[in-house]
Amino acid sequence: MSGENGMPGVILVVEDEAHVRESFQLLLGKEGFRALGAEDVGGALAVLQREPVDVVLCDILLKERSGLALLIEINTRQLNVPVILITGEPNHESAAMAVRQGAFDYLAKPVRKEVLLLVLEKALGHKALLERKLRLEEENRLYRYNLEELVRTRTLALKQANADLRQEVEERRKAEGALARLNKDLETLVQARTQELAAKNLELEASNRRLTELDAMKSAFLSLVSHELRTPMTSVLGFAKLIRKDFARHYLPLSAGLPELAAKGRRIQENLCVIEQEGHRLTRIISDVLDITRIEAGRMDWRQELLDPADLVRQAAQAMHGLFQEKPAVQLLVETPQAPLPPLQADPDRLQQVLINLLSNAHKFTDQGEVRLRVEYMDAQTPPMIRFTVTDTGRGVHPEDASHIFEKFYQGRRGTHDQDKPQGAGLGLVICRTIVDHYGGRLWMDSARGQGSTFYVELPAVA
Image (cartoon, rainbow, N blue to C red; front, side, top):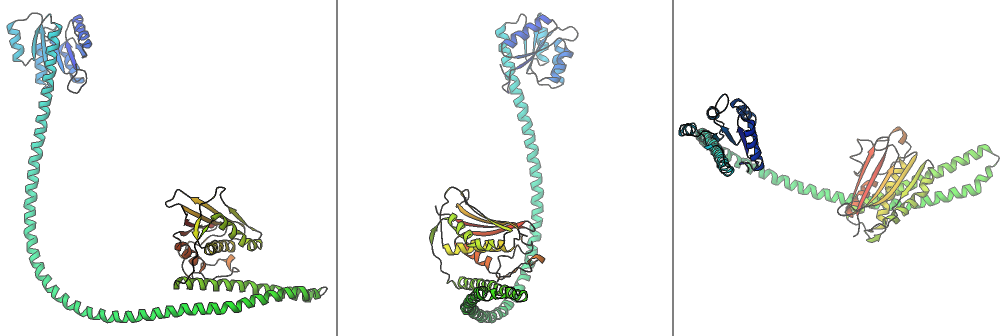
């Protein structure tokens, strides 16, 4: 049998005769109870102090103090444990005394098993009801206390709120008067400001029209100048190359055996090479200016083709092969996955322009080590992307330049090792980002000063 909490009922058997006590414990154990034992009142009180007990089964006649004394102690200490008294010499006087002292029941020896179990079942039920009653009384007491406290708090709050409301009404009345005066002044001020803003708006519209005209004139001028410069520059490059070849073929051999003349010949060749290099640089600047002018004017041509990302990487590396051969200390490495990559839909010339521009920058600012061009499929992203990565072992980007390198015409800080590097127009990365943005991708950079840079290009893959 179990108590209120579903655990086996705990019965404390108080009997000074060990064999009788043990018999009760054995019987109760077989019936599913947890039976504890004590031989006197002191022992029983010690058990009650350290163990939760559901029912006390106690003999009235004990050696020192009687079972009635234990009953009185339990009631005095308000332990709320039903006590069943057992006697071998039943009489009306002892029964009446047990009832008066609050015993739950009174049994005569020998106690029949079924009677004992029935009385224990009733005692356990009584114990459960008693504990529930005490619990409900405590909950009711706490509820009444909390309710009274809540009423007291709410009353004080209502009194304070009433006082605050009266003060607020008075302050609002005063504020409404001041607001009416301010409103009148504000209307006058708004009328005056409206007239001023109308005049300013007319001035801004005129300025905006003028700025639009100037911007169109600037774009037209840059486009015209770029076109006009490209034709003569092509001629300059062509004639410089012809002169260098003819000089090397026909005139330089004539200086054989003449050291002074040979030195002058080599200097002339070097000067012609400088003309070609600077001419190519100027041509690239002109192309960048033309591209940015077309982009800003919305006249850029965009072809749409299905492209193999791995082919784009190999073509870009092939286009840069000659430039990297001029700098043997820098190796160009290409990484493509073995598995086929999903295609891209874009203009092949524009994507080549992006990759070649990034490789050219990496080559320019890497004196030794490697430049690595890699392509991979980022299928874990949504939507899936094709990522191109250009990593170099150069000197990296200065931290103060990192947030500006994608701005138009921005020129980064030039260190002592960069003084011999030719400067561009500061448009290459701007054009790259514009192209990548056009196809719904993104371009960004990670760099650590002295440890190189990595530029990332991500473009949506075609499903």
